[in-house]
Image (cartoon, rainbow over the protein chains, first blue to last red):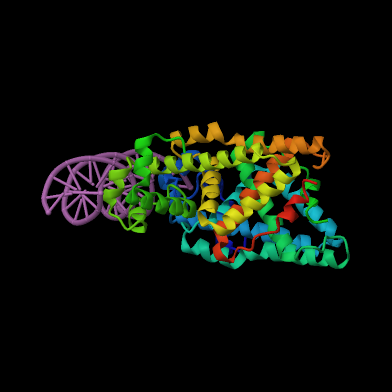
Length: 200
Length: 200
DNA sequence: GTCTATATCCAGATAGAC
DNA sequence: GTCTATCTGGATATAGAC
């Protein structure tokens, strides 16, 4: 989040929110470049002019969505880390929440897609790139710290380095988010316990 | 592959190959829509006109690359399945080969990216979509069959269904390919044994 | 605040010279 | 076979009415 009050106000506005939501879906499904302003207008049942009334450009919509996505993800990560729970249970909880999250709430999967897209491709506005560079490592670092703590108390496998475990944790999650995006309703969520086997 | 002789001949042509290679890199890095013909021309050190001399359209380049990517992937999968090796060792071999493949040969990671992209997004030419619909399930099915065989001989964990194991196998690989694409040289390949823990 | 109409620009694709 | 110059269409963005 981390936006100022006017912007928050604006976000709360119904039309603006409809446009953002439509844009999120379309960007996740087609990518930034393939999504036309006219698509966003149509999907949000508003005119093209209205889209430009709320946003300066297509890039601005994208950048705001990226900002929101990272804000939510970071908040969830730091919340997880602050919980009063043994490390291993934190990892289990995170896996459950993430997998349930994007199995049940489409927008959750879309956010992961957006982040994945924006991280991978060079074809994103430089403002978005800046946000990515600033925040992308954080989720990895949180999981890495939890993994390290788990190795210390003996509940997480110590054969591999914490950073390797964190990397495989997030790449697996992103791979699943992609699969969900590709298969939609037909997506059958894997048992969190299956993924957990890598870490114990 | 599965292309006729003239096309093969054409592909062998140096200019054409340069263009294809440049396009593969750009499509993988930026996606289809964000890649301009002028980018491809510049990256392949040829003129825009030459690109159109060899290809009818941007979509055609993309579609041919998708076709090649699936052909190579399918061939590798079927080759794996036909090997005279116990199931579990086939899985181990596949993981090693895949991870080494895209750690060492950038183009291998790019192909996975291309397939991932084309599978996820709806913004691809319909000819490419047709190829995807026809071939995308095959790698999953091959791995599923090997997993099932491994469960039968007791070397693969039988707690989860073979299709779930196959799904997590490929989503993990795709997640890693994305990570490689995002981090390039800085990518540190995970130990295949770490992923293998899910399956034993 | 929301729409329609329009200007501008840029990428895809073509024509034709060398 | 390769290039430069050009046409055309469509997407971004703006202007101004309601």
